[in-house]
Image (cartoon, rainbow, N blue to C red; front, side, top):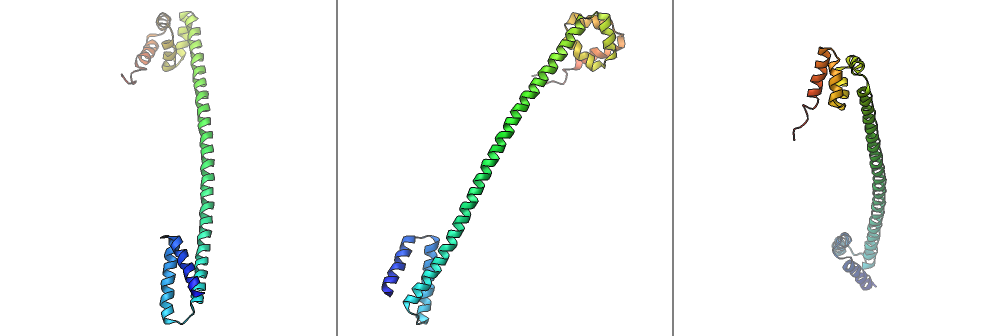
Length: 179
């Protein structure tokens, strides 16, 4: 019987290869053989003890493997949730870009229509309105108008107001890159 048990343990160690369990078995066998020389314990007791230690170690390894699998599942779920949130953010960002583009286009259309209205007015009436506007605001409208309409409005304004608006018109693209 002790020979059979020894062969079973040797077979198990051989099958385990060079892994951590095989190392533990080798260490246990070495410590048992050291004790065997000093103790007179029967080999069956040594093998039973060795198997009990191996079973305990295997249970620890199985528990750790289960914990690692559970952790891997939680990480995968977290990644999926994060990916879904990122997709939602990207979708919202695209919708916001479209909305801002629509708002910009609507604002430009409104300003363009207003510039057309001012162009259609009599120059003296438009000049009176432009005199009341801040120079930068007035320059924006005059820049959208055809040069003859802008010239007629500027001609109807007092020289200092016309000069301020002209300076704004001349310098509004000054800080843009040349190339």
